[in-house]
Image (cartoon, rainbow, N blue to C red):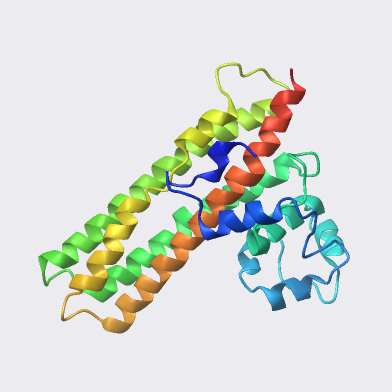
Length: 253
C-alpha cells in the first residue's frame, strides 16, 4: 500500500484507515458470495447506501449476495470488496486483480451524485429552516461556511470526474495517457475538512437563540454523518481505486 493512500485531508491515519491496515494482512473477510443479502443489511444498515450506489434495489427476498449481484448486473467481487472495506476497514484483493475497475468507477460516480444532488442540499435546506436568516450575523455566517464547503466539495469531485475518472476510462480503453499517473490523484486528495470543523464549531458555540433547535440539531447530526460518509468514500478511493489503477499502470509497462 503506497504511503500516500494512508493520509486523508492531509491528516494522520484515521481510526477507519488504521483498522484497514491492521486487517489488510489477515486474509479474512466478513461477508462472502454465499451469504444472504438480507443478513448484510440486518447487521449493518449503513450498507443500504452501498447497495443503492451499486444500483441494487430492495425486494431480493432470501437471495444470496452472489445471486442478487447477478440479477442486477453488479460485479460481486467488487461489491464485496467495498462492503467488507466499509464495515471492517480492509479488502480482500491484491491490488486490483479481483476488482472490476469499471464497477468501482460506477459506484464512485453514484456516490458523487448522492453527495452533490441529495445529501448536501438536504442539509442546506435544514440549516435554512433552522437558523432563520432574518436574525443575526451568526445565521448568515453558518450558511456562508456551508455554501463554501459545498463549493469546495463540488470542485474536488468535478476534478475527480473530469481528470481522474477520464484517465481511468482511457486506461480501460487501452489508450495511452502518459501525462498523468494515479499517484498524482493521491497528492490532490483532500476533503477540505477545516471549513467543516469551523462550521460545526460555530453552530455548537454560537447557535442563534431563536433558532429552531430540533431542525438545527438535526442538521448538525447530518453534517457529522455526512462528514463520516465522505471520509469513507475518500478511503474507498484511496485504498481500493488507487491500488487497482496502479495495478493497471504496471501491466501497461
